[in-house]
Length: 207
Image (cartoon, rainbow, N blue to C red; front, side, top):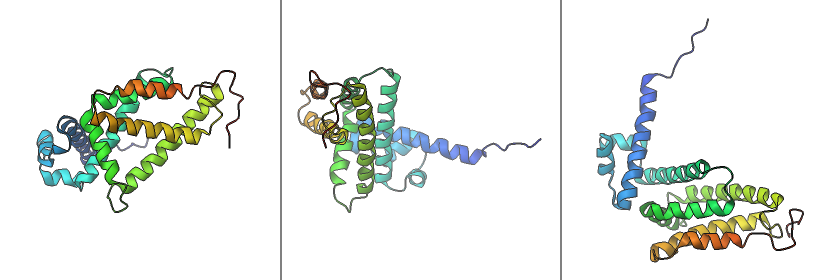
């Protein structure tokens, strides 16, 4: 009988330490925004700054990993709420997540704006992120169009980009004026995607 070798201890510990550093960075930035220092994050984990940079060579690497963690947690919350949630529910939940974590929202807006410069270290990250998100939302909308719950007289690709633009724009407006109920605005927007009276799932999108 062949013995299957288990992952060796050092590799497992390395992965665990990286995860602890990432979680500490997420919590530090959630609390203090970009003012969170690498030393603060290292102290939370009990490692030195050189040990931290072994896993995340630059501050940008760490900040982008935190944004990935934000996305993962947001999607996890949506899945945990049930598969029967509508697109309207998911958009509202996304904006609620934004208002619950203002420092992370500010980090996202700041980095994405800076990343419009092709020389920015985050340029490639955000370009890929928007491509992937647009493809994912497009697929969801196409399924909703076939089910007749989203208007099918407009291309799903265009609607997907509009959805992403609204979510990003609401984050910016809310940071300028926290009194704006962006969840309510998101709900109003998504209701504009409901099929017009008399239309059905058989309606073909316009070219």
